[in-house]
Amino acid sequence: MMLSGVTISAQLVSGFQKEEYLECLRIASHFKDGQIEDKYKCDEPKEYVRLYESPSMGFDNKWELWENKEKKVFLVSIRGSVPTMTSWLANFHAGMLPSQGKYHIGEDYEYRLCDDPKALVHAGWLGSVLALSKDIESKIDSCYKSGLRDCILTGHSQGGAICSLLTAYVLQKQKSGAIPTDLRFKTYCSAAPKPGDYLFAMHYERMTRGGWAFNVINADDWVPETPLSVQTPDDFNETNPFSRVDDMVKTADMKGTDRIKVKMLMRILRKPTRKSEEKLTKYLGYTMSDMLRDLGVDYSTPELEKCANFQRVGTTIVMMPDEVYHKKHERNAEDLFEHHMFVAYMDLAVRDL
Image (tube, rainbow, N blue to C red; front, side, top):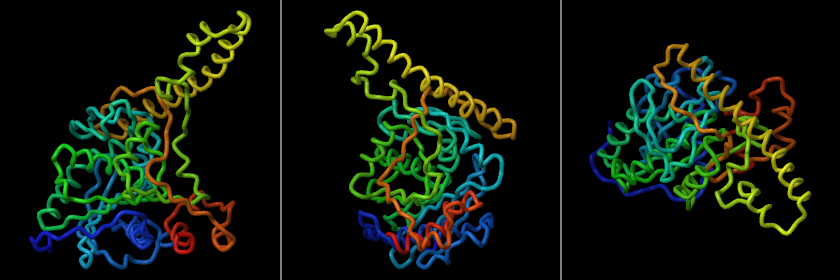
């Protein structure tokens, strides 16, 4: 792969590095397939050269391999959404699946994204990770055998959500010994939506603690607020009082009429959130998976969990738009993606980070 077989000491350091993120943004905006309009692109990458472009896989997903020859770092860039029905249905397929299990997309996969099987992740983006995983792992192995020990994982928008799940995937592979433990990963997600539930977010942040995983967000961008999220009493830790209210009311020192009132109040609070959760699981989970199969995707829907408690993951770097930014990017722009695209993030990042 144009690289010597000499082992090179690690170059990456922990903590958010502005220039690393800006280069990730440049790379993400210059995907070779030509799907990105020129008006949304940033300048050309300054330090990295492209080594490889993958074919389309899974839910119309692609990735690229880049290398910084001077710093001896290789980079995995995950493509974001493209204007195809399959690509967008992967986003809308917002059912929840356990962080460990089996999945069929083109072939059968066994996966593990964190140590707790109760942690949940986005069904569509999990499929994207698994479909890309073998190709990515083979190139990681090649880079490692060539002597490299530093890897940046990055992606913008859908690519950022997939990148966060990919980060968990490769760290678990390291834990099992399938990927060498002296290979260092650092993650820069950009404009990423929410890829898993609260429990997964906690595990992810522990796995990447110490400044090794970031998600940069423009405060005017609506995409990081998605998918639609609902929190119910069932989403709390088991020791929470909401799931034990009946027992607590029985033993509480209160009048019988007050006990009835408390129970009625809790039912009123629980019912709408649980109904919303059920509808999201039904329509964004199962209906979207049916539509993917109708498009010819070789995909079998696993049994989805009844949860829609999506959360952001990683260390969030928030950029706050100011007057200078809004002179170029209007608050109420007609373009729904005005504040989401690469050039908007670059315009804000060069001044605000």
